[in-house]
Length: 502
Image (tube, rainbow, N blue to C red; front, side):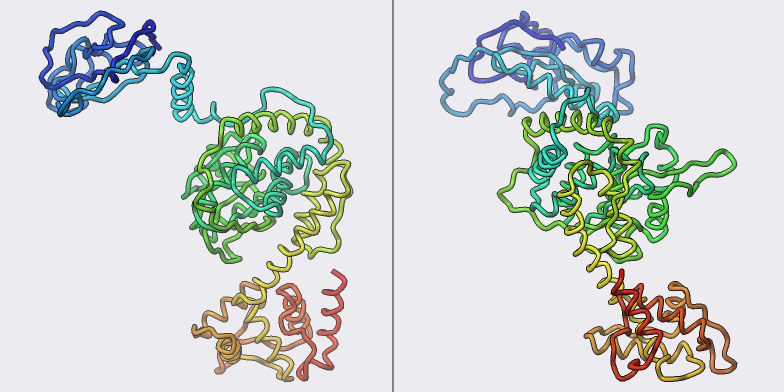
C-alpha cells in the first residue's frame, strides 16, 4: 500500500477524463493528478499478460490515464462549487477495472482519506483479503481470558447473541446453551444439532451470530453434498453452520447420523466420521422428516425494520473477548463435562438426550441447568404435536382405531379410508391413496403382508397389536385417549401409564 504525503484537496478528487492527454504527468502528491501511477508489483497485472477482453491489444501504459472513461464523471455544469480546503492523504492500494483503447485492464488510482482516518483503508483491505482466504477470517481465540462465573459468562454470551440476531431472551438463551456445547463435543456422547426455522434474512442473522461464538465455525452454502463434507478438515473438528432451506430427506438423515460417533462415510479410498456440532437454517417451514435427529429446533421471527443490519465494531470486539473466555471455560471444564451426571428425566426420550448433552456443559450452575429444562419443555411438546398431526401420526391413529374394532385382519385400503375421514374432520382437503398409506406404515415400522385377494394389510396378532400401541405412544399418544372404543383395552392403559411416567 503506497501513501502520498499530506496534501490540500480542493472540492474532491480528480478522475481521468476521456479527452485527457495521454502523456500528461503530474508530480506525486498533486491533488489535480489524473494519471494512474505506476502499478505496485503486489497488485498490478503483469504487463505482458493478455488483456481481459479477447481480441484487443496490449494493456495501455499504466502511467497514462485510460481514454475510455465517461467524460461526465468529472464534468461541471453551471457555476463551479466553492473550494473547500481539507487535509487528506491519497493512498494507492486498490485496483480498479477500467477500459482503455486496447481493452479492459486495471490501474491503481489514489484513494482519499481524511488525515487521521487512514485506518479505514487498512480495514477495507484486510476484510477483502479475508474474503479470498476465508479460513483466516474464521473467528477463533487469540488466547485465554478469565470469564468469572459460569452464570456471568452465559449472560454475556446470551446478550451478545441477542444483540447480533435481534432475538428475544428465551431464544437467545437456547442458542447460548447450544453455542457453549460446541466447545465440548469431544467430551459428549452426542453433538446436538440445531435447526433454525423462520424467514431467510433472520435465519442468516442467527447463523452469523453463532459463527462468532462457536468453536472453530465454518459456514457452508446451500446444496451441500457428501463430497463437500469429505473435504472438510475433520482433524480440527469444526462447528458447521449450514444455510440449507431445501434440505433433502437423505441429507437430513445423514446429518442426523453425524450427531453420534461411529457412522462412517467413504469408499475404498478411506472412510471418515463426520461427527460434530452442526446448525442448519431449514427454511420458513420444515417437516419432521427433513429435520436432522438429535437436534433442537428454534423458530425466529421477522426483524423490525429499524433494526441495524450489521454488527458494530464494538460487537466484534465483544465477540473476540467471548471467544477467549469460552476457550478458558473449555480448558477448565472439559473433564468435568465428560464426567457429568446431569439428567433431565422430565423430558421425553429424544429431547432428554439433547438436554443431557447441553446441561452437561453447564458447570457449577444448577440454576442455568434448571432453566434449560424449562426452555426445552415447550420444544418437546411441539415435537409431539408435530408427530401426532403428521401423516405418520394420523396413520397410526387410524390403525389403532380400527384394531379396537376387534378385526383379525385390517386391509391397507380400510386404513386409508379412516385416515381420509380423520383428515377431513380436521379441515384437510388432501385425499391419501392406499399405496401412500402402505408406505407410511412401513416407515413407522409396520410391515404389511398379502391378505389374499383382499390386498395387502396387517394381521392383528398380539405382536402387531403391541407394536401399534407402542408406536402410538411414541407419536404423541395418538388414539390412546380413553373413549368408548378402547375403554377396556389393557394395551392402551399400559402405554398411557408409560407416557405419564416419561
